[in-house]
Length: 442
Ligand SMILES: Cc1ncc(COP(=O)(O)O)c(C=O)c1O
Image (cartoon, rainbow, N blue to C red; front, side):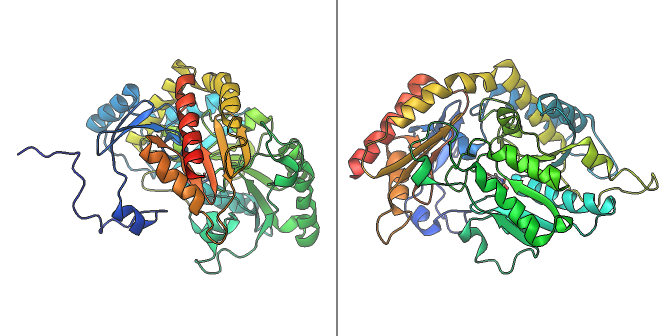
């Protein structure tokens, strides 16, 4: 008898799910079995409108033929090639295509398999870079409160989300944090970049005074913080961070795992904000989320610091079995072609004002205490239920799913980041359904 792929597996226990309320899920599973363009198909056959591009990654929408075919072709032609001391053309091609759209001054790409790996790679490159230049005392890494940089030990150490850190021991030594820039009292209901808070970048001067610039290797921030519940950079903030890091010889890393590949209507947030860091971490949209892949994009100065010593010697003792793997590279090339051919970054920029107005129409609904947006990112912050933090937003997420829209929540904040192919009518459906959910919950 033919297997019915729409039948839910009968034992859900074996799979320990990531960042999931496992017991709740397994009691009432939300199973997705297919996807196309803006929609998932659930196991019950419902069409679920994707308000989150999967996990901020399927920027071109789902099951795009060019990407699917590229993967199929590559799997049949060259399934794998050793990543160390050997090469294959597609990884080089993808690196060049990434640089074609990267901010000016970016000159090299180091591939890995995820955002977390990209972050740990960038932090290691920063430490080794200073050492290679004879400044080995620069070992300190600076992150930011509420920052999310994946789940490796490096990433959670520089990250600033309490629950991602406190269960996991002492973390990396020699890490400090800038204050976050979430200032609800001053910036509530802001459309786009908030007016207030640029001066928070000056806290870096305080950390420099405290630790000594000669001990600090790098500062890492998300240009727009996503996983913490969507925090936009105040106007002028990133510019100040750039000026201070440059003044003190500190590398600036932008973690663009969610902002890379068009989320703000420009290829990278660095271009959107007009602030170019020394390194950019990326993943997710690099392959449209289809195959795991991440990357660290660096300037020539960072890369070239390593290119000394005997030529037969490895310059950077770092890499992954799947760094730039053939299938991921093929997926990446096809993804970038899809973005370019369909003008998806420009499309995101063009539809962002409509998105903004739709989102801010939710103001005044029960328990909505703030709304924030930039590019095709939107957040709706809810008033937590007293004594039961996260429950109000999680309930909204469940109710939204029942009504055929996929949103995401962190804490009591609803975050949305739809594929860049979203149509105005679909924005209306997404936001209109969310409004119904919020009203029904009151
Ligand atoms: C800014 C940022 N950095 C890193 C990561 C980690 O990426 P991954 O889950 O691919 O390891 C994420 C994931 O959401 C992210 O938003």
